[in-house]
Length: 142
Image 1 (spheres, rainbow, N blue to C red):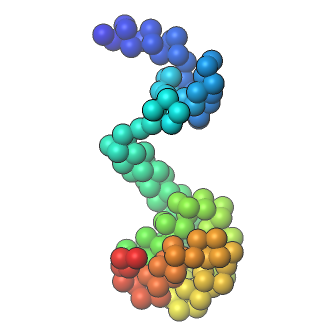
Image 2 (image 1 turned 90 degrees about the vertical axis):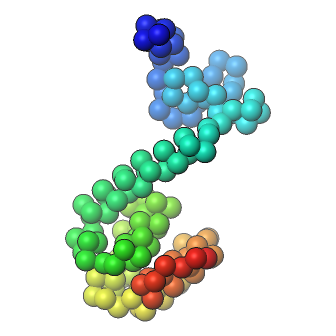
């Protein structure tokens, strides 16, 4: 079947972002139909696989860009990971004062800064949970 798979790959071509196929349906990869209108999508297992890849990539970027990251407790690392996952590292790095306060160990000040941000206005429940986790250093269940 290896040759059959090679043929499919050659005929479909690889596209690493969502695109509309020749019939106008959302597709990704080697012709994987993801358009809801045609009952496309991914399985929960595939979503978990993608999430693990994304989390690994975010952690790698955090380690490269935040020198004090490893010195934080795991729950506080998770706050920065969560924020970087949602906003990207560029978005997280705009929290200059908050990150400075985290580095100094002023977790109350950092949490207060998080709650005063546009991010907190856009995703208030998430921001409140993450701010409390930063403040306390304890996992929040939401």
